[in-house]
Image: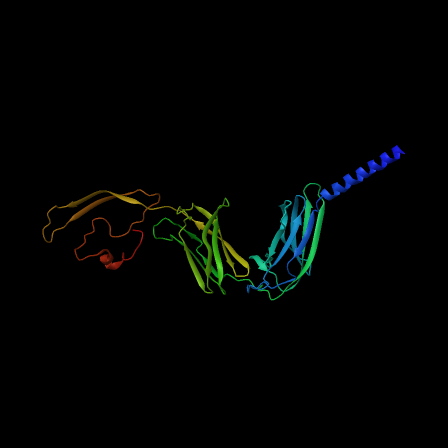
Length: 316
């Protein structure tokens, strides 16, 4: 009798411990909810986006994809680490996905039926859990902006000699957009040029002097430029190409000697001016003008010498 009672008590304790263990286990993925079944990503501020919220019970990696009716998948998150939290995780989906076409970095989904799929994989034992939902896209502004008529100086030499010192970037925007122009050197270092500049639907032009944002000059080499245009709803397009920088440098000179003679000047006599100039910069200095010993008159100005052939000439 006592033995049987002891067995019952032992069995009860085991069941209690198993129940407590079960209560202590957390669900890998739970409370998955979408805030809307229809979105209209067109920038009018009404139903432009939806929120997908979820809870994670154990450390996991989370992936979220959008799938269209033809089965094409657009990843939004790929194996993103997540840890258990008292607050739910929330992903705001504004209708934009990675671009599918050439030169399209990001695009708004066109009208149609779609589904979202959220998958979680536990990092401890590899178990998985997932949940899927359906939604509609309506009245989407899915036509991306374009960058047309692009013209970029193929090579230039930013050395202050007034010959091809700057590079020109010209293009036309059919619609207003926010643009950026960045350059990347052979080592992959990013050199910002134009950052998030709102521009109207018109021909645009920018001049790059070969300098970084801190004012230092870039070095010799071939650079890749990337021009991006983003509209108000999140469509992003880009154009890329290469530009060559040759012989960059800063011109600098100092006058090391001057002499003017004679000291006393009679009317109609000649004054001789002698000067020595030292190049203290890191590039050659281009000079122009009449040769040494050229005789000016007091009626001359530099722009009138030799029938004005040196007028408004830079770099000399």
